[in-house]
Length: 84
Image (cartoon, rainbow, N blue to C red; front, top):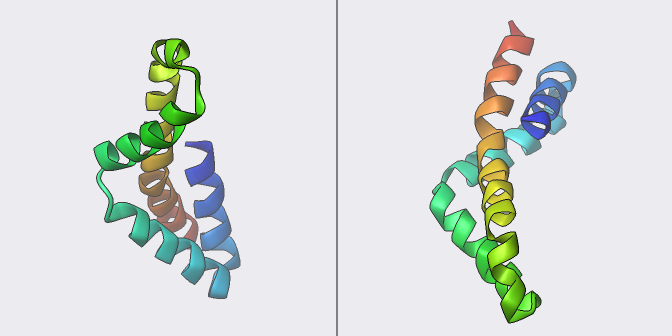
């Protein structure tokens, strides 16, 4: 949420090229489903950890992945409110 609100405020307040870049990144992020992003992040994290520790960090990794996928809705809403 913090990422989305910050980027949405920046896009709405500054405008111009900053807004275009942030909103295009948001559009690209919206094309990937949350589960796909979660699987990608898990696939990157799993080989980098010892085999016995994956169960301990599975839930935090999942929460992180969902958070990374959900910033776009906040950014678009805050940008629209800022423009108004």
